[in-house]
Length: 412
Ligand code: SF4
Image (cartoon, rainbow, N blue to C red):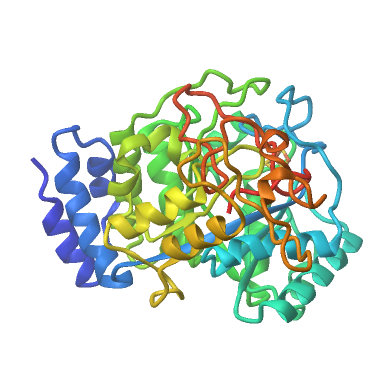
């Protein structure tokens, strides 16, 4: 049995896991996995203590993409019935970001579908970022707009963008299997451009797309070599209507091993359990918090996540604190906020209301009487207290029908 604790000791002494050790971690047995998680958790504690960085996604432009990434519900020819809309307005972007910030997010990720932005698109995002920073000067902004052309990263940096996300997703020799309309090298180049402009680089993975263990190790080391600051790990959500529909390669323990392997290879990086954590880690999500130090709150770009309130409870119950909100009781704040807006926390069909700004409040906000808030029925039956859905029991992604691009209250 491999001594994962000794690997962690060496990592703490400045020598992270090598390729053979990473492969051993990735292919550990189920019975060995908890020793692996224990070793990875020592690195997590060393670099990040008990903090969890909370990030919040705002999908600025959804669907309608000309690219053919097989995993993506927004791809060319996707039959997934995701929300489709072009660029939202600046005030809507700022409003949506505000929900996540109220929920404890210290970083807002502003994302748009497409191969890459035009210069006009970049200027749209610049205006959004400037307005957002004026209202929330403390918040970090990460832009995720696709492949950047010359000068665009500099323009974003100049406007106050803090970070740029562009995932490598998989290994170089697997890339052509998941996308034919752009190359792995295009992705690497964009991460380099972002770094050269002084943006913090965020680049990560989507796992469970048919990659071999060796290819996954290649991808992890490629991310390490990129020397970015954060690594999101997405677990494939196999949307109906995409080429990878029905692809189901992951188990909760496999997901833990993947996260722990990334931690052993790149111990000091912000490691995020990202899209698909609910459906793939399932009941092991709280355990994953001992390996990762970052997550997205609420919903994803085109699919639902578990309720933000459940996320905040999971963080609290594990003895963790939200980075930047260490002195706040975010669970209590969130519950108070919901109660103050007429939400019965015991009622399974309640919705999380948006602040409507109506003078004196609007009474029972879930009634829809104020004309601003959706009624519980409009927002969708089955929505839980806190505005979220239960983690899916049916193992297919649930399409997002609330938040940005809709009139329904977001999951924040
Ligand atoms: S991942 Fe991005 S570039 Fe690829 S299809 Fe989806 S939105 Fe388009």
